[in-house]
Length: 101
Image (cartoon, rainbow, N blue to C red; front, side, top):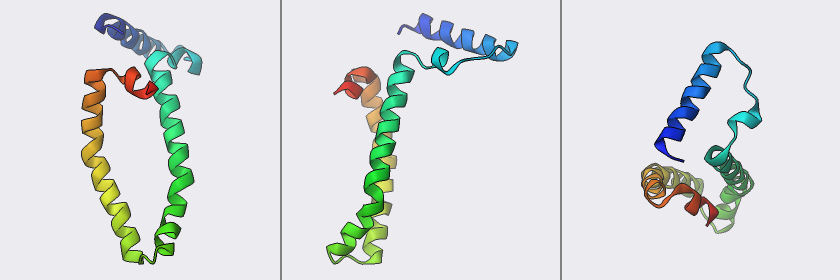
């Protein structure tokens, strides 16, 4: 998608919001937005399946409650540091190439 196409899409969306026209979900979910939304939903579903059992798994490995807290804390810190780097790489390499891989 070129810059002109992006600007045209933003302009059209803005005019529809200002003029009060109804936007359908199908009209908003096109191209990259659709791909990113679907991939985000799948990622969230996988997190929702795994994370509740992670603490039980750590306890079964004779970990303590403090260890569970440490794992979640360091995981959050790693995400805060690595998500921007991943976003930069995705912008340079092309987001659709990375989502499809």
